[in-house]
Length: 198
Image (tube, rainbow, N blue to C red; front, side):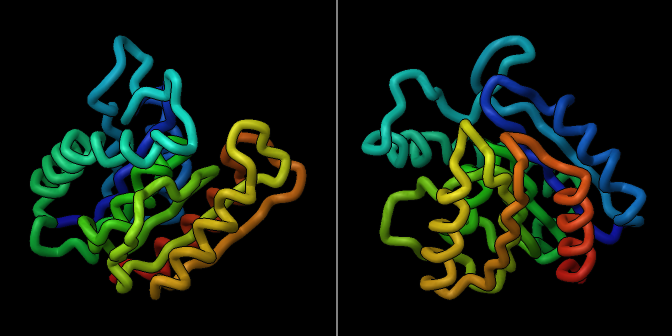
């Protein structure tokens, strides 16, 4: 059995193959970990999504996140079972980008997935209250302060809310970075995962 599993969660209009490149970049720094980058269950062709963003607003986004949970949970449960970690969730890390981060943060904030680590790049907390997080799961949020798609204030707010709910959250704001993952952010994520997975 591998030391653990990292599940990479893509953003809207992307797909698992795009996220697999991040897994390949992380792998040398995380020997013994397996990487999976599934396609979200919705969308068509190479353009997948965890939930539709057509007509999305601050008011209706939480409902869309809740509606996306069954499909998300089925994808995650299947991968964890395939790798033999159904009874060892502390060996699993969820790493998301953009909409993938929204779903990873929801998995943590709702308490559904008490995994060993969550890393959220360019994300936001869109889970409806009350939050009931898995407080044993450490969290790293990474966000560029020049992100035109998802303002970095979203990660700052997520960190504040989840810390208030008992989560050990760390945040890294990268100067001048847009809606993307930098090499520095990847290195920080690798160090974090290496530190917190058993």
